[in-house]
Image (tube, rainbow, N blue to C red; front, top):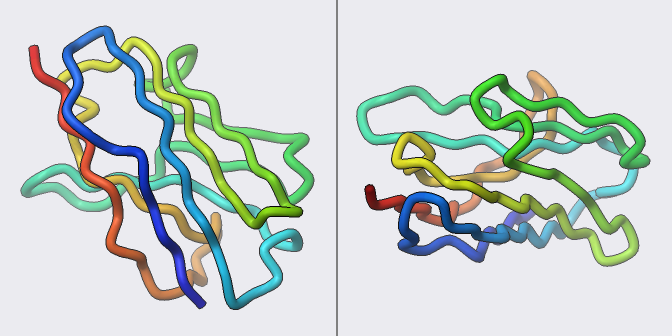
Length: 115
C-alpha cells in the first residue's frame, strides 16, 4: 500500500491550492477515504472525508465552504481543492482511509499559508 500526496506549497492568505493523493496497492474504490493534516506541535486531525462512491462528504467546521474533497476511483486518486486559505491551514496534509484502521502514512505534502 502506498499513498503519494502532492500539490502543496507556499501561498498567501486568500489563495488556493489543489492537493492530490495517488493511492496504490489496495482496492481504493471500496473504502471511504479522507484527508488529514498535522500542524507543528499538534496531533494529526481529520480534515475531510468522502464515501467510497463520492456521494457523501464531511468537513471539519473550520474548512467548511472553503475546501472540497473529491475522488476518481478509476485513477485511484483523492483530491482536495482548498480555497480562501488561512494561515491556520498551515500543516502537512496526508490522505488515508477514513477509518480507525489505516494504512501506512505517506510522506504528506506541506501547505504553508503566509499572512
